[in-house]
Length: 312
Image 1 (cartoon, helix red, strand yellow):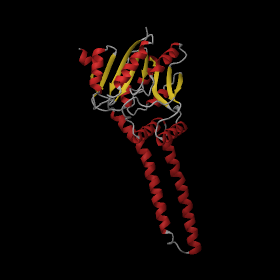
Image 2 (tube, one colour):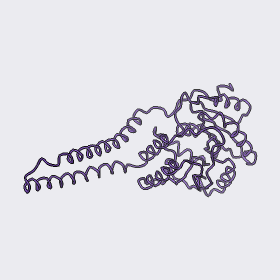
Image 3 (cartoon, one colour):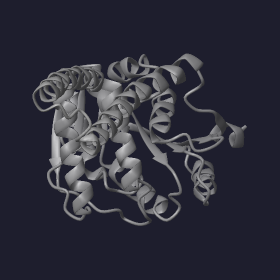
Image 4 (cartoon, one colour):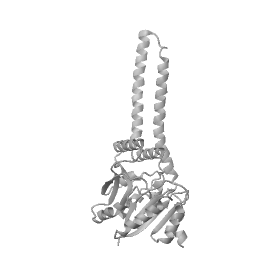
């Protein structure tokens, strides 16, 4: 019988864990496969780890990985993928915004051998703040315009993959991870399932607007060098403008003999161009900082304890 590994990143999810556990165990009863549930505690400050330890003692299918601190969801997903032993591997959030009821349909699709992955995306963003929705739509348009790697609009991390695809993802060991891009970059045939947006079953989201904005910038710089080209074109453009302005100033001086007038506008231009230069340097700095972090070769995460520590 095939085995399915369910990876669940967790950060302060004590309010929703019992709801998720009851739901995923109910869904798994209707699927002809063995299961393992790998919960990755990403440095939670609440009782998340205590709850996971209790589940692990009572249910042999429950495994957990506890980080020494908060390393982020990307690191949690990577740790779960490394620990998974199933023939098929799923990633889903504990807040039930990723409906477990779709799991059987996803599994049956992969059994046909026509696809290597079944992924999910949201049809709408109902219930989400309007500003966040607007920026999300803009992000997908921008990154798909800049990058050769297609990122599907509304894509979730919720997906079921074959072990072959998981092994390919694990070969991408970069420190600065953007999994939505990595899933697409490794290739393999993917079927998409769309569903209406679902709000959290309990608790509060850990993704603020600024965290999402920073995450989107991570994705753009991880899968596109277009911002560097953009910065270069800005530099060329302003060089041409400055050259034309020099000609205008020379002509004006020769004709009117008044080289001093207009200094306020000149100062404004200098400040504007200086701002553009700093902006371009900032873009370059983002890429240099990522290279700096990669060269350090730090581990993507550090494990403090797992279910093996309490079962031995």
